[in-house]
Image 1: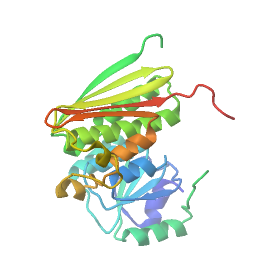
Image 2: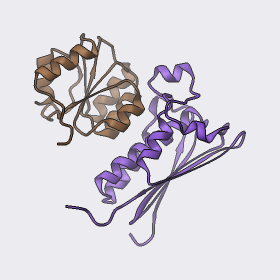
Image 3: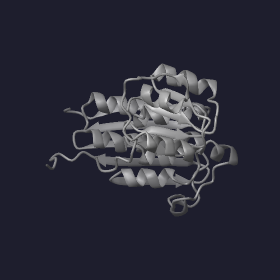
Image 4: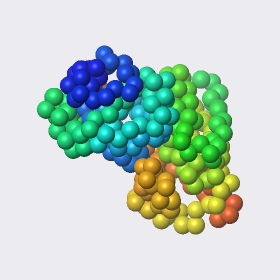
Length: 115
Length: 146
């Protein structure tokens, strides 16, 4: 599923569109930046409630093309601006992280460990 | 690459909200040099964590990148407060970061363990009141399996 399709299906509020045609291959959930840095794999969507600029730095470094902010957390303006500049998609969902992940699973964004 | 590729980066202590710039540059350089992607992945983690430590704990400092065909070496040097107990600092979950830093998702005591896990050798020298020097090496495996 592409970023554009995913954001539509989740009815998430898109703050930065990123590359809408990019395919998402799994999900990483976490608010500890070191954890995400150590565990995320390329092309995963990142579900978090962190809203500051460093989120973009980690996403860029780990090549995570989509950041999903859960629980209606609003991104700080610096984060939104950096995501637009780096062409990283950033979207806000009212759903809490767990429910957001259930939706992602229902949409077929599964765990791709080992693939 | 006959002689090693060398590059220096200054990391400002006021960069709290833009940590990762040196790490991003290091990653871009390694890509440009054609380093294998698994080495770049590990080097990026090492660089980001080291940069984060410079900003959070070291009062800023300097990073060095040295690339040879057989290995990537990343160093982080600061003149900060130093680490009183290196063994403790290497333990997963141990952190001296402030509450404010923790709320940002840093300071979970994962930085140095992350660096160790992603490097083939790690040297950490520190003197209280003088500063800290971290040197991490990531080996480039020449023969690829499969």
